[in-house]
Image (cartoon, rainbow, N blue to C red):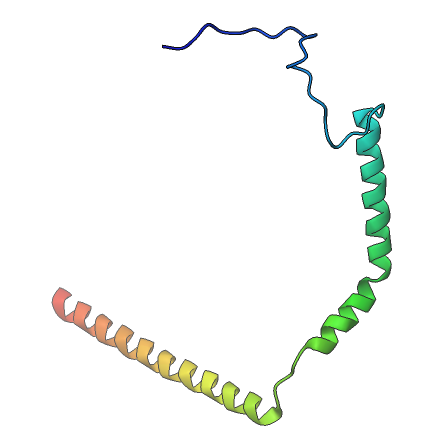
Length: 103
């Protein structure tokens, strides 16, 4: 069984809690506006260095050598051809089986 319900009044000190993100005397809307302005400035600053960051990341890419590239491309083409032939074979056998059953 639960105890009696407790109602808090607006002036009750337990109901009023301080927001740790807002400094004393600062209104919450001002805090949000300041945070939004700060974020906007940071985004503007980042846009200027975007191309520099892209260049830095591009330089980190390790490209494979020509011999390995051609070898791997040959494997992909070979496996693709084998799978194409296998699918064609299964499809034709299935079609002949269906025609044999239907008559």
